[in-house]
Image 1: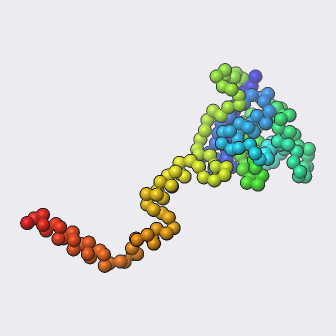
Image 2 (image 1 turned 90 degrees about the horizontal axis):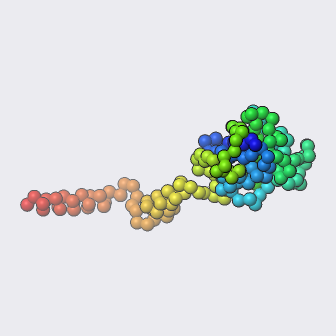
Image 3 (image 1 turned 180 degrees about the vertical axis):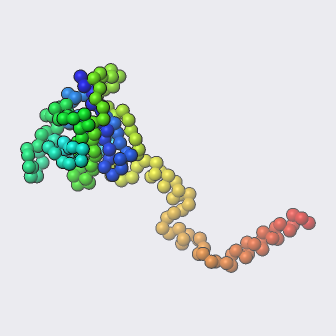
Length: 190
């Protein structure tokens, strides 16, 4: 049995990707579900694959279901198509689109073919994760929690200036503070 390793790049940033291994006998529906799981997306929206070439041009469509849109060629259905039947070259590429309203697009590239399966892996499986993936419905990851902590620490709320902080060039208070510091330091030397 052939084991196919695909690298799934997020279209917006190629440094963010997931490597998924899957058998050549499994279907595009299995790959679709593995991609969603790897990127922590839900399974509530429309999805489709397009067979592609090295220039990432759209080819034959392999869709979750037949949608109400015009097709140039009748689409294949994910659950009916084994992945191995659509592999034409050792670097086969597919374009994966999810949630047509939001327009999530991923580039799927075959990066390795192995003849032996690993008995410790349940296929399909995500075997490598690079970068913090996009959030399907908003923000996630380290940036969000760090920003919240910084916002609390430095009070970066829009009304922060009205909370008692002075304006630039407010010299009256600076001279009072300097006088107090001078008075305190002179007592130490007496």
